Image (cartoon, rainbow, N blue to C red; front, side):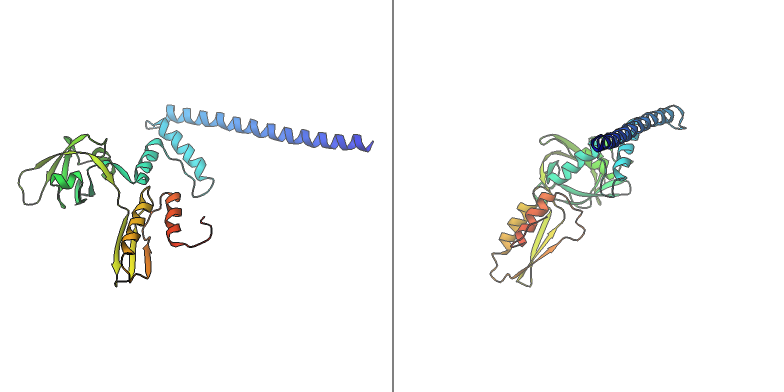
Amino acid sequence: MKKIQLFFIVFFTSFLISQTIHSTEIDIYKKIDLFGEVLEKINKEYVEETNQSEGMDAAINGLLQSLDPYSSYMSPEIFQEMQTETSGEFGGLGIEVSMEAGVVKVISPIDDTPASKAGIKAGDYIVKIDNIQVQGKSLSEAVDIMRGPVGSAIELTVRRRGVKKALTFNITREIIEVQSVKSELLDNNIGYIRLTSFNDNSSEQIKKKIKKLKENKNLNAFILDLRNNPGGLLSQAIKISDFFLENGEIV
């Protein structure tokens, strides 16, 4: 009798769990149907035309952000941009730029890059890129146009202070390596290393800087400056930490 009662209790409990799971699944499907209805209603009746693809991206992102503050969705475009930033190299011209008065201003050409070799100077204003007017575009849009496959050509139309006519530069894109590490020797015995991001070649750059600084026999300390570093690849953070830690597990 007890065995029969026990079996009935186990069976009834299993039945209730099964019913609860089944009920939850039905509820989820109802909400998926509801989401489809809302999407269709927005598409048909919203006061302005909407981009359904962007709406779906926003919905996915909203779901992930509801989990915790650190989860988010990357669209293919943003993911590609992130990969470019963390790879540490890209096909480009080799100039640091900012936006001023609606046009792209050259802060500085990077030494030994196509832009530097072509004669682009700090303070130049880029007004056209391949006959595309820069005015009206954002800085990121202008930078995207200037980046491209290695070996491909690009034409920049530049305005320079003190020169009446616009200057035209035909430049061939090359691989530009992002220099994320700067260093110097302080007081003849302290190695100062500034790391601006953790990209794919940061650890190799720091390794070279440490080796160079250690050539000084008076060296007895390092300063690793991470101020305003936005982060990057965890694998690089581990490798770089390992240069300065003697023992213990990293992460």
